[in-house]
Length: 254
DNA sequence: TACCCGTGGTC
DNA sequence: TGACCAAGGGT
Image (cartoon, rainbow, N blue to C red; front, side, top):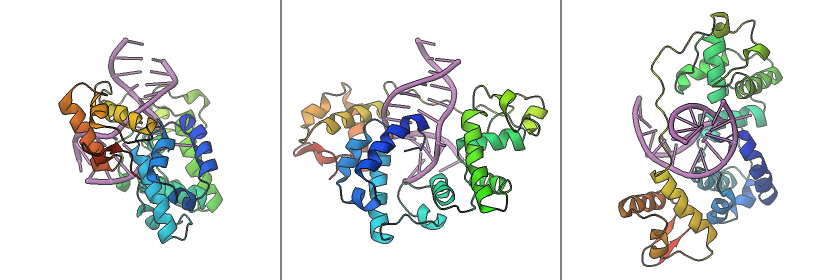
């Protein structure tokens, strides 16, 4: 849920989710459509499908227990470098570097003296954070958590609060006088209004709200432009978020 | 590698 | 008010 989604938006949904599905096995026993419906409008609904598939894999391959090895975690659907390491470090106390967008920004400023972080790059990110971790297991976990928290609350993207930063006396960027970003600007996010993403979201919203399959005409009614609507529907079918056909109707995956 | 994938809040 | 940004992953 936390992948590319602000923490404050996740917390209430996570609480509901864990009350309904307290274990991987309980989620695995429900149809994927229930997961997509419960996901509601958290965004990136493929994550709901991935989380359900992950629960199935954990139940089948790991006896219902979330694995603690980074390599085993990485093999699960929807779990990449960040999530695997976050689970290993925070749930199991492993001494592994955890690097998300917040940590990358803190490392860029405090260690490298750069105003903005580089694009995610495991070969650069992980050894750099590894070098910051103290030997003690508990201290290493706190360092991982502290770097993320610092980036989320103090060393923020737009207006960093250097006046209250605990690293102010040793931050390479601050000590250099907070130089401007040198390199090319990261490409700006594409507009959502009128995008394929929006059309996918609209189709999925209708499907979540319906207990019976939607007719092709009902799907067509959500967006006026046929080519874009067809493209969005085709991509949802490809992703497994929608099943069915024009003849039998469209529904969420069982 | 670069691009695609939601949604809502902030300044 | 529209661009920016958010505990990334898959291809």
